[in-house]
Image (cartoon, rainbow, N blue to C red; front, side):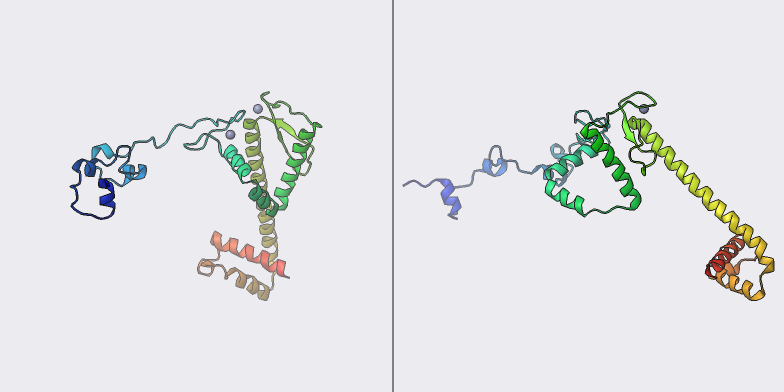
Length: 241
Ligand SMILES: [Zn+2]
Ligand SMILES: [Zn+2]
């Protein structure tokens, strides 16, 4: 009966055969002594052959590899964010479907989604055909100038649609600012007209509201901040009556 060296070693028979020094140092052929992560990160740096593998920190952006997709790929990836998410949603479609059912939207977002779905369904059923960008003639995408009118769309390429959306957002912001300014100017005008005719008790009530704002009571009455606080307080007092 022959028992190999391995069997003896496995059963703890010490000293039956001296351990091969080559084996201790080198290990088996094809057996890595470090995993990839250890090789890169957990081994002292002075051992030159185990230095971390250099990688570019900011690789140049590449294009998404999906056909007909012109977006840039994700960092160190081959797909853009949208194609990656689309693939994930397909792989996890039961979960994605349940999550989609549970979503809720603001009235504004819901209007926009309804309008987009209307156009998507019209395109799918062939009642509507894609048209080129009205600015540059590239393949167009539907754009809703007013989401409450779902069927009124213009066709713009991605670039011009983005520009148009930015312009619309800026215009809306400017309009909101102008509306706030007009409201403030009207309130200031009303305050200037009404203040000399207020009874002392009424003035006292307005001042009480104004002094609730921090630091206002320590300012001189003519200071612009104090005046603004007084006008705001007048508006609040008038609304309350
Ligand atoms: Zn893509
Ligand atoms: Zn265009």
